Image 1: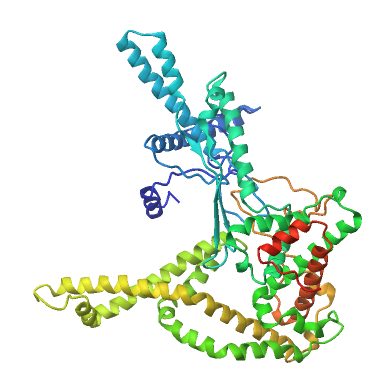
Image 2: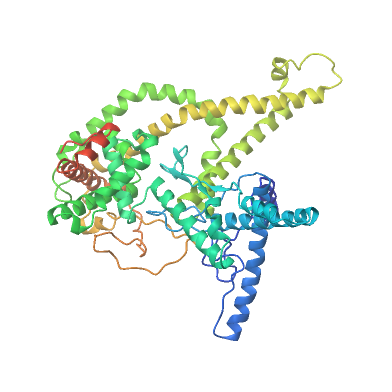
Amino acid sequence: MFANPISGAVLSSSGAIPVRRNPNNNGAGSSPPSGSAKPHDSSSSSSSSSSSSSSSASSAEGAARSSLFRDTSKALAEGQVVGVFPEGTSYTQASIVQVMPGAAWAAVEYARYVRERDAGRLEVQDVGDGGGGGGKGKGKEKEAETGLRIVPVAIVYTDKARYLSRISVKYGEPIFIDSYAGELFEGDADEASKAVVKKVMAQVEKQLIEMTVNAPDWDTICAVSMARSILWGDEDRVPLKDWVEVSQRLVQIFDQPPETASSDRHESILQLKTALTKYYALLHYAGIKHSILLSLLPPSTSSILDIPPPNSLPSSAVLARPTLSLLTGLPLALIRLILFVPPLLLHFPGYFTGPLAAKCLAAPGEEEAAAQFKAVGGGLGVGANIALALGILWKQNKLGRLTALLGLGVGDERLPFLKRVLGLMGSVYFGVLVLVKWHKLLVKANYRQLQQLVTYHKLFSAFAFPRVADSLSTAEVDVYSRPPLPAANVFIKRREAAASSDSNGHINTSQARQPPKPIAARKLMRHLLHARAKACVALSAHLKTMEDETLLGYLSSKGAKIPVS
């Protein structure tokens, strides 16, 4: 990003410090903020050619690190705050998969810098004062007092792929570098630095894990997400301040070793996990959200679907409740849509340029990249729309009324150009500010209404005109019953693939899971509704038979409602 003259200039002016963050790049290596090697570390080789290559790579890497530590030490010496992303990248995984030691290395290097700086000052003072053991001893006591601390920060998105996602931000306990001064400045400098860095990053990783959601595998994350949706009806109803704890307590339901639970209990956990992940996967491939489906078709109204597919054809009677729900909410939806038209005209191009940028530039399955490109592409589309509108107004000289309202239409007519410029600036500021706030106020409700219409169309296609050709066997739908795995991230250190599952039944997500071919949502609807019924029953039965009354009480206190089995 710094290689690009435009983005590099923007990042540099904002105080960003360039780092090399690819742990899989053997040639470039990684700087400590994302790599695992320490400063000035060189590697050896058994052959002369590899030794020469390693030496040159190490030299280039050492130069980059020296520049990095020079910048971080300078910022810290000026009393500034240095932010480091210890994971080296943004990714979607079941848990924290890597914590790089760059923050600790930067702190250690700064501590050494302060020691050397103060030692130099002390030598000058000793020369001027004629030397003195007492003064020198006092200087030694003060030289390690940097006041430097590392504060772990955990950022958790409730849905990072969604516009206006909620964000949970938590701050950990400060880790004071001065408490390691005795260990850092004794013995071999390299070995002491390594030991301190290892201890500091162990604390950082421990706190990050405690403040984020971590599961043994990706299917467990999907099962927890589905359990949240079923218990709260909509994940947005889960209190944000309790999001991480609620999620982690649900993870503990599935993360129980077989030796700590009876065989029946373990089997119940596996069945629950299978039911929830199947429902999650079918929702994903059908392009439907549980909360939207629930608003149109509550489980109690779908008892007609008790017979598992494909043994019976769908019935159009299922559409009665969704149709009534849409018709009763139609007047309010129309009013809300009419009120939404003015801000929609401003943001309309962004609804196309955002998804287009994500589709063209983001790798399939990368939620972070897709969200970033959507934001950038959408912003460019809205900005172009604003520029176009104001250009037309300027060309047609239609800003006279606004300049008059702003008090710029009277006075000396020798400055008409300046008045027009001020009118243009006023139009940009007040118009965009009002429309953006207006859009933010109504976009969620209108988007939800759009999702209801799309979901109703899928229900209507499946149940109004049932076709035998749309029926899928259990074997045919099985490939759509497993959640897709997150995309691979090149900035995550590669590890050897493990077995497909472990002794606890945790499915290993390191192995590729081929995505199935796209399918019409109407072919999955009956399977989806049956999977929802099974997931609700399994979750209700499991929670009611749990011996941990504390968990049930906690979930209920946070607004969870146990589904009726």
